[in-house]
Length: 130
Image (cartoon, rainbow, N blue to C red):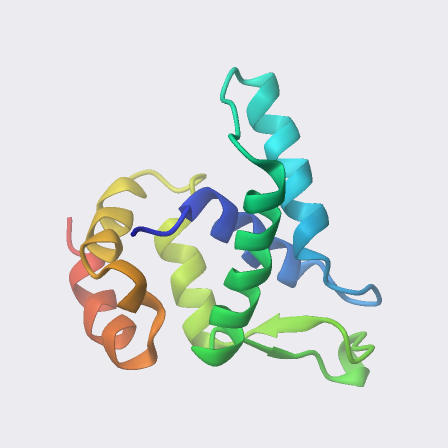
């Protein structure tokens, strides 16, 4: 199983913008599904897509990609900041940066283990080589 990198990217961008508001992965998944529909792509099950976003939030916390946002930075106990590892992941999968396909492919090869710290930290240097 590979991650849905577009959904992951959306979540990481929302983490960056979550100061002062609660992080809502299900809402972000719905917004992305709506955008994809407008582009002609169909999400089979919105509920499953939203559940996947919630699971990704858990993976990102466990893997050390995001952590609780400090109160001094707009933290409310229900939002996050990107860690250095999270910033690296976002830079690897960011679709606005040319060449995002190769890092996504490298991450896909590791499957669900891609976001475990040990695996990710080993893959990141390889993914940045084009």
